[in-house]
Length: 262
Image 1: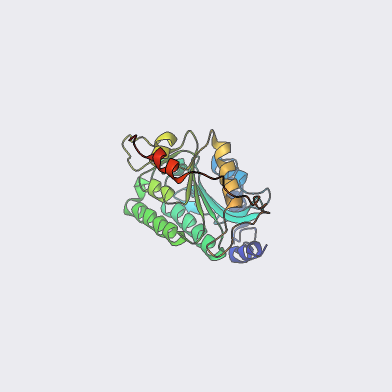
Image 2: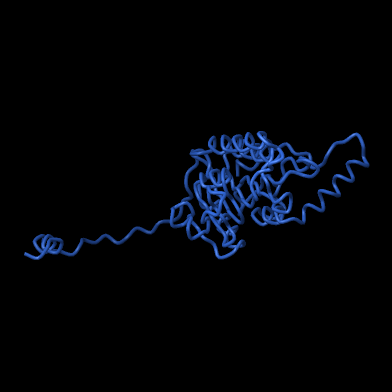
């Protein structure tokens, strides 16, 4: 598959960190290792094929901790793809400059490689302590998402709260999948963002029975959709229908059947 080596070249990951202080590097790796047991990592690893995930900006910091999202690339049922996952176990997945930078980078990677982008949403909102910088972070993510529109498939998986500007980003994807705990609404003051309401509004295309089914649906979509706007859709062996003429019918009877009596 051509896209996979291209994706690997773009990433250019070396698998480790380079620091002038080995002790500091060791403590940082240990702290990050503890983070790998969080919901964000568990979800994104369940999306990708085992052993294929390459993380982007693994040690990105936000405040006194790590960034509130996990992002990277790999294969999904053998198909190259990129994804990010907001991590509710880190500052409740709140949007920050660091998270926006990570998400923006993975959007750019998906665009360059021409592969699908999956966004997994579960966030309490934005980091208010960042003030105007937090608002700018949302703007950067919106711009990055818009640059992918019509170029590569975008799939949103809403597994928790996704409100305000975050909901605008998620709803702008080509396909939206929601779990029962998902909440997708522009209103931050008690709007009905349930999967049922989102389906009724035409925002949610797939309402899953649980989180695992939601992620399985995203995996299936990645394997079914074309990778980008210049690749063809998958081809399947087609069996032509038997050649047969339609049964004869009276034109008068057809017209009478659609008209009022008399």
